[in-house]
Image (cartoon, rainbow, N blue to C red; front, side, top):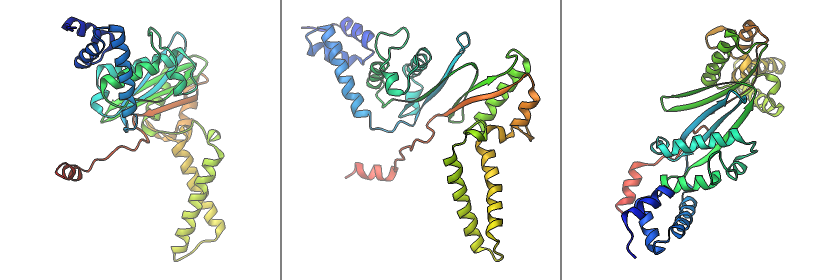
Length: 306
């Protein structure tokens, strides 16, 4: 049967698939729209499976806070290219992911994908498959974190970096200008300095033990190469000093305050008053820790002429 341009247009609007894909699906199903939709979905799953092995190190980080419910989230969704990350449908999907996290208490990404986002009729996983098929790249929901309480957030997007930071604070008066300013200052501190923990008591014993072992090994090697070797007891004291520096690097409260390095963040917090303190934070940087594929242009050209 003849497939009209209007039929193709209607199917495209319902599926968001390409015009030619819609036309072929209608032709193969003799104009049966529902069968065509099923066929496109099956092909979308196949496309998604083929793309699942590709490295997705680009993408977006998003932060959302519902002030009324005192709930906030930070999410990272990855794509293969920066070009795809700027596409309207990719940006829309990232917002759908954030809304799904806000509305639910999912333990992990797989659980999240099984849920139906607000104002949607399909699960998040089904929507993801559709976006992979229509955008044409591997897309991964990498990670998310949800907080409840008095929250502040900051999103940095510049110089190729996208960093989303959310902070959970407490105070006697959350409306006090000093409290709001302190929260903003610490968001910038965390974004710029990338601490891993709020305070030293949160650092796992294994992290401390491993670092101390590394530093002691380095100190002993340096001592062996020194013209004036030091006693082991002195080496231990040297390592203790290095561990203090290590803590200052990874713990927010021990870091020099970015706006006044003469004081630590902990000292700054005490000056804020109003019982202000930091309970938790999360900082996501786009593509952090993902090994990007590095193509060798010369090898690529050589392979094309073989």
